[in-house]
Image (tube, rainbow, N blue to C red):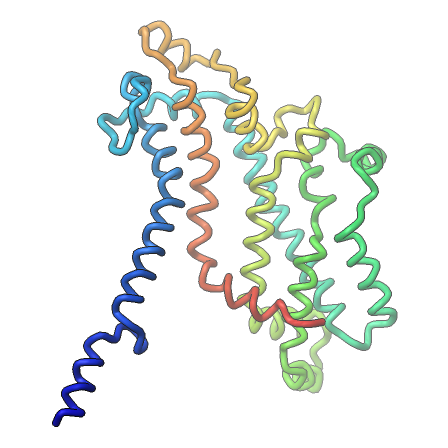
Length: 307
């Protein structure tokens, strides 16, 4: 009886998976605090973007929205440059991700085959490009010779293959049982059909993970456009326009909506404009991420094995 009482008393101090309740409380408190610290900048950005000029201009800590107005968003969406920039970034994400996934998947599948002639030499050449580059000026001259400068495709075609993503992809493909492919070959399937009908369906975790990598990369693209887009400014991506709004503060507020607000003596708060611009650029990728999050960890862990 005494032993049972001691066992029952000790079990009352155990938390999840047999751990101590105190340890669980400390861990959960730490993690919740960390989440709040990381989420607060986004929350602050959001409420300032909807706040009135007078409320934010007081300079007090702004934790709860005292009022909500859409002035900043009306001005932003009334500017034609934002619409063009959003279309360019959307094209980069859709076309760039599709092209990159096609090239990366085919390259990864080819390198996963030990029968590929010169496999190690070719792979070594690819890996060298991860650590060394020709430099900014030669890179620009190559783009100029290819006719990609001031082109809509300058942000997608030159960067359609990431060697790092390809390495993840072909390492994952190596884990696919060879018996699946052999049975398909017996039925008369070729390499392309095996890749499309067998390898890719069983490799969805790494495919979704790498697609997310590419989509985020193309959505955040701005440096290439800053260097190469000089004349055709309608191809300016959203992130480059956002950079000019936030850092250089060169947003043209001369659109019709902004003039109407000035005529009505409505103040336009520059920080509010910046926060609204950041929100517009951030929300789309945040909406997409939860749909592929479940594949993220599994895809990275299973793809990151020794070659």
